[in-house]
Image (cartoon, rainbow, N blue to C red; front, side, top):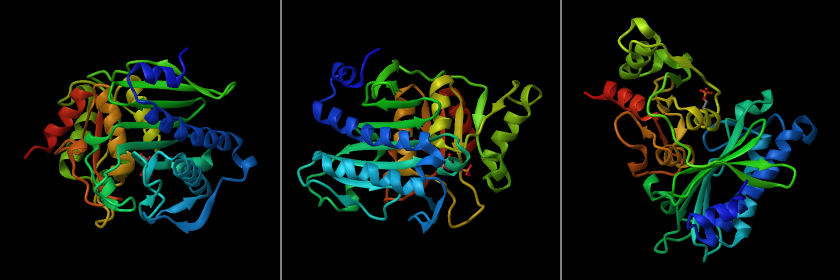
Length: 323
Ligand code: F6P
């Protein structure tokens, strides 16, 4: 099985970017190790703090954020970083070529139940016209990403990665610490009979999503004339990993549970990198009304409605949103 660096070199990825990806993965290996140790590493449970999103921080959120932040700032390749756990952009090396946005531990409510979590990252080129600590470094559409990926901490630790030449999946070989290529040319099937949504929010969704899900649930006897299966892991990394592995539709739609927070997922740390992976694997990613990767971000911690996955199913869902 092929190792990460030669595989990326064959794709024409430059050595600086390969070094940066490997730097992020060094921190992910450490996170993977601490997760495996669980209670023994003393990192489970919550802190008394809230993050910038107003959510209670888990100890492992903070540890993971710090691990990734430290390696990125020491790498010499990173001009600025933005993290879901940091209020502002953090300046790195003034000569760094790249900027990195990341969610250090996605799905962290799963930590305490020993279930799936992941790290998501998104890499852009730095903008020489802007100071390193300027939020505008990151206010670029997802279509400008040069690399995106996630590491899923599951029974095995897996990396899904794109540098714009399709999606590759690597598995961490814990015997020697390298990521080995286990799926080349990941392709999401165009059709699916599986969807993922937190159905407990149903009464708060907008009418188009209510109607779409009702029609899926009606199965063979309904307008879609086929039965659908539902899955919800409550960690976007794990749900998107299933979509990349066997297709499906994943959505966290607009809801009116809290009128001040109509969307849950973050554009820069979650929606954009996952959209890049999904599109590179032949799928679609949309808000229902527009392509996610074409959105011009207005703020660092902006949230967005997300519908992504198998092309024909996402297109069908989009049709429900048309006026
Ligand atoms: O944004 C964090 C996140 O944990 C996602 O990874 C996941 O898809 C979603 O929130 C789960 O939300 P809920 O707790 O409403 O099921």
